[in-house]
Image (cartoon, rainbow, N blue to C red; front, side, top):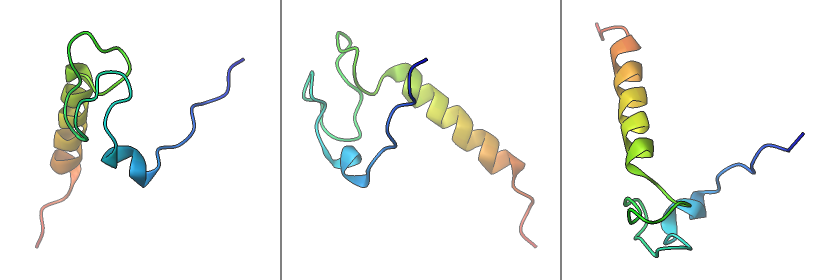
Length: 59
């Protein structure tokens, strides 16, 4: 059984991709298989939309 990956550190979001050197917070190049992908961006957007929709309206 493999162990879970280590947790993200705040500085992880301030570094370029180690493989394709994409800037922090940007999608990696299409050929890069180690960084932030379009699928990741879609999943993040869906997760944020679900959280926004789940919050009760402010009164």
